[in-house]
Length: 294
Picture 1 (cartoon, rainbow, N blue to C red):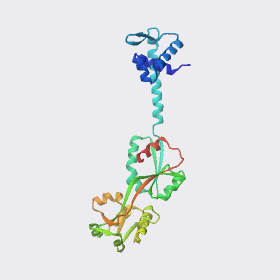
Picture 2: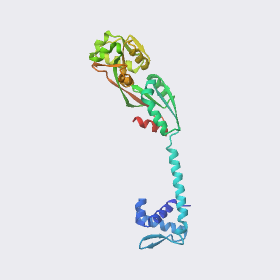
Picture 3: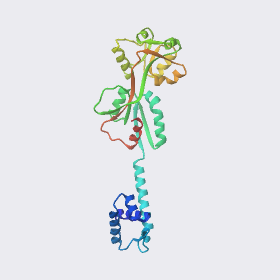
């Protein structure tokens, strides 16, 4: 049976011309290198090297005869190993992502495009829904990873990586209520203004009401909406004062289509978190994708 390690030692000695240099390159001792050469010579029944004052040179009857074939064989083996490693570490397959429309638009879209440019063979299935429904899809194995608004209740079957994206909730107004953005207002001052909140089944709404209750403040909305885009449109048209993550209204605030209202106290910071099934296997494609959020 061919012992590839012996041929690797032979090749390294032949290339370096020295037992000592070969030992350093192979991370083995010089006596081990000598023993390997002797073992291969015994196996082949021929001397492979000639010792000179300059080091080790290939013998005409042995080493020079087999050197080119050994070099070619080792090169083919290295290429085969490289192809296997490349295949093993190439991202392919499908990544199923669950998140809300807003998280896809403001957080995930650019990252998905960047990942696709690196790994064009990977396909994506994007499932948009509210956080509670997204979590249920993840637990039912309908998606591989979920990005959700925090906080959420702990779940023993899920692994959470928080703070993938910070969300700073702020009150915003359109031109009709622009005067509110020209000063710092107390939250109680907003009671007499028409307010636009997200629907009650959303994390944003529950977080807002939970914070207000700790202050003993009761703010009731005039309008409830199911999307941030609709809220921005209504606020811009003067229908009321909205509450939205600054990150989702940055473009409109910069263009002065909306005006941020500074409040005392400010609203608490929230975040987007990443959820994975606790014991599910992670493909190389998914592993490479979620590395961008850790």
